[in-house]
Length: 112
Image (cartoon, rainbow, N blue to C red; front, side, top):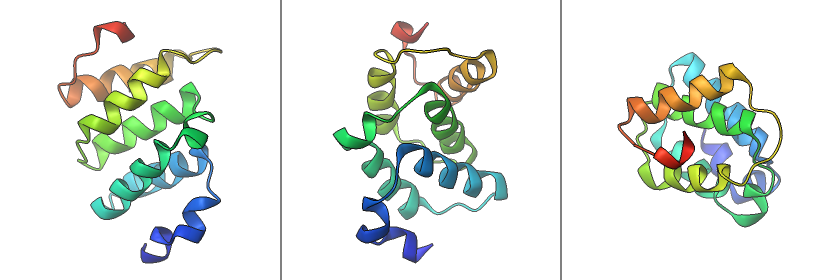
């Protein structure tokens, strides 16, 4: 995981790459909080947020819960940006998003 923290690798990632990496770690039950924090900071870069869609948003917040990585600032920033997203929001993705925010006790009435 150390090589994933290199700036060269991070600079070439898309938001879906970050979502997939977090999902993979969560699925395997590998908790690496330094990696989560670094990837979370990367996702909040303006050029990365432009690539956020509902699927990557859902994957990221689901992964955070599964990794036990309560990151309220990251989750609130993603929620704020999600309010501007266009396109279809599938029921599975919506339920993952609502479940993640509920699990961490982050109430966002503006998302309902």
